[in-house]
Image 1 (tube, one colour):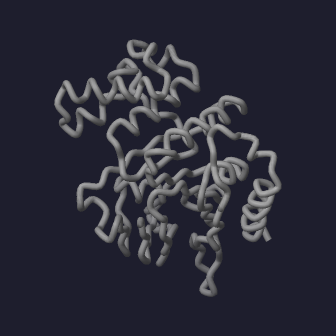
Image 2 (cartoon, rainbow, N blue to C red):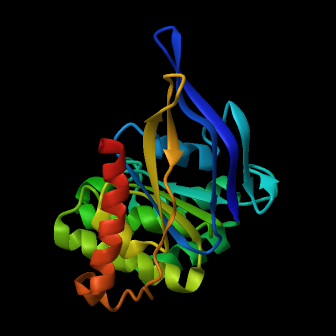
Length: 259
């Protein structure tokens, strides 16, 4: 279980403090895919950075299996919106990077990298540079780099937003297929209602509200439990009444802030 326990975070800008989170609490169940969706500026990407331990909360705690984040040997991997590939390194070297940072021996690194490249279907691109890849190939490389370290928590910041519609659906199905046997706790930030409904087991809608004191802060709306049986080999789920019903629930929660 990943838990935000009364987390507060503020940005410091132009000599003043802008509160983003204040006493914010939410749990993310282990082994599930969680979608986080909300209007621009509500703190979705900041939430990922907090969970990745790249920034620290001003108050409260973030726990993974009951331990403060950064303690206990848990591995987090993050996939950024622009893929974050190093342009001067080849595909193989980009994928290998996390293993190097974890000081994995060379023979084991080679075995792990070659295995994940085969699984994702990019073995033929091992010596290519990112500039030689299509958008979908860059995305596969970024996913391989994240998964090769065998993380406990996978964080994704609008990872498919740069892809065309059909490539986006292909990558969504790849993610579900890869996660089917790994059961990695995955938190994916998205602006797409349809993507949230298709990918996730749980949907977390974030909203900015004004308190009685006039302050504005981010809160989580009630969690949407997406009970469909996901099957990456059955994309026809997108055509079912259950899919449309889940999309409607998400839209209603998003429209509450607009009202």
